[in-house]
Image 1 (cartoon, rainbow, N blue to C red):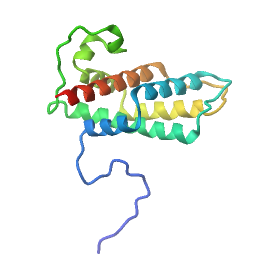
Image 2 (cartoon, rainbow, N blue to C red):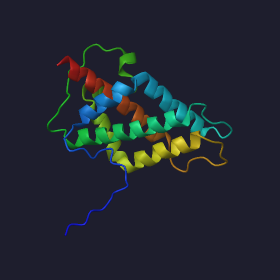
Image 3 (cartoon, rainbow, N blue to C red):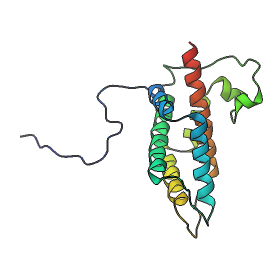
Image 4 (tube, helix red, strand yellow):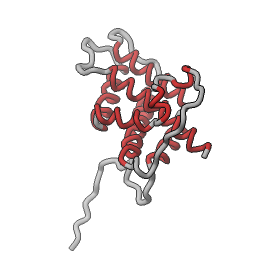
Length: 174
């Protein structure tokens, strides 16, 4: 007799069909604008390091954004795992420094380098811990600051957002 167990954990990724990381990123950018996402991430970071104030946005919006970023991080990790099937090398034309954003010229040519570097330094769980901590500290007034380096994961996330948008933009041109 087969035992049926009820699993009470959320299964955001438990889907019968196979999806690619690029499809997950497309979904992320359908619901979240690049500029608005970077602004909200910066706002969360600013309020997380301020000891005497908290973010004024609705907590449900912040929580939904945290979940979306966590799904985005997993999509980026999925892209790095399947890099052999998908390459995004392009030649660098005359691009203004404003178009590069935080990306270097090499990263602009091959946006996958951003994801490789980020996941070489931090695991998916460490990015999750970072986002959870930043949301926690931005929601209230606390005496202590986060105990880890919070600038590097923030920079990696910002660069990943730029790189993912660039990947989707180039994919749309093909």
